[in-house]
Amino acid sequence: MDKSSERRLVENELLFRDANTKVQERVKLDNRSHQIPKNLKLHFYCECSNFHCRDRIMITATAYERAHKSRFHFITLPGHENAAVEKIVGGNHVYTVVEKFIDPAKVAAGRS
Image 1 (spheres, rainbow, N blue to C red):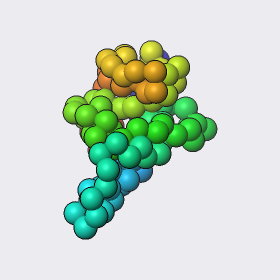
Image 2 (cartoon, one colour; image 1 turned 135 degrees about the vertical axis):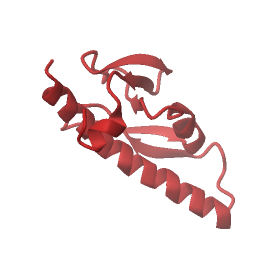
Image 3 (tube, rainbow, N blue to C red; image 1 turned 120 degrees about the vertical axis):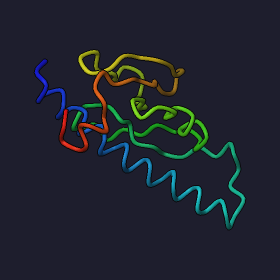
Image 4 (cartoon, rainbow, N blue to C red; image 1 turned 180 degrees about the horizontal axis):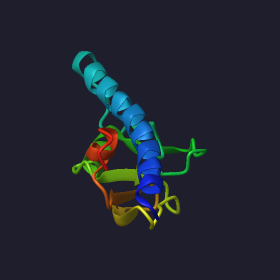
């Protein structure tokens, strides 16, 4: 796969990660004024490279945060990973944690 195709796939994943990060930030804000149960499952977007995927992953905010310990890590539904741009590094029957081969921060800055 050429670098520009790889970059386009990662850009799509970054879009959904950005949306999910906003959900995560909102949960943290809401948790300051209300005690949100730690086991409350939220709808996060699948962060796969398929432009048409709008599937949701129901996990806790804590699980989402844990899955993103590295900026190279994204969450996808099982079977949505793309071996051309990532490898599986964790997960379970609900979601998969994938690690990108290229630095998403550089893609976001247009320097891949």
